[in-house]
Amino acid sequence: MMTKTDLSWDPHCTVPLPSTRGTAYPASQCIGSEYNMASLNEPQRAFEGEQSLTSEGVYVSLTYDELDASKAMARVKSPKAGAVVLFAGCTRDSFASKAVTHLAYSTYAPLALRSLLSIAKDIRSKHDLVNIAVTHRLGRVDIGEESILIAVSAPHRKAGWTSGEECLERVKQRVEIWKEEWFEDGGVWRSNRDGAAGVPVADALGNSSTPS
Image 1 (tube, one colour):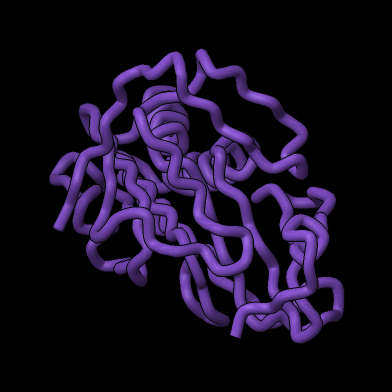
Image 2: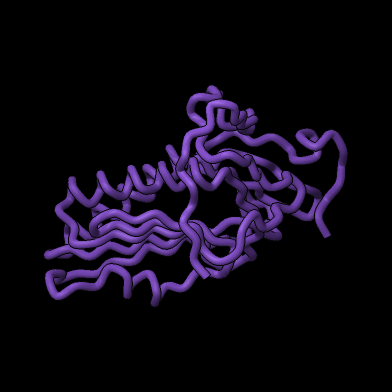
């Protein structure tokens, strides 16, 4: 099942974004009429299937389900393309020499989708791509599972390689998705970008609870 998110503006919406991102969004920047930030401890499903936005040659989506690389590639294939490039970001088993048990991602879907669409449209135009598809997973992502798929098709391979990498970096820098890294002794909540400082999840929750 696929659903398209409501992008209507709600001036009364408030979004208490995590302090680890270092960004405060005024109510005027909220979209949609309901705020469904998943819990810090163990993100719960805010929707089923996929929520997506599309534009010409562009598809972006969010889902709590396992990602499907073949589906992502099928979305971008075209007779006009001489190259199809797929990037898959996976959960690795350690961070800073510390064993990781799993990751968990949370977001406000309408806002994140709007950011994803803006980035993907710009990347497609800049690199003269045929198609681009970006899907980010939410909720718990275990070791070895994919958290993001970026598929692009282009007339030539160089544009495919460079555009995919640029898209990933911009998604990590701009999109309103937050990552919890879970270890045996608890979790660290950090914004979803390289080098971001983290806050222990127990501190954010005001207790020492750890998901089972």
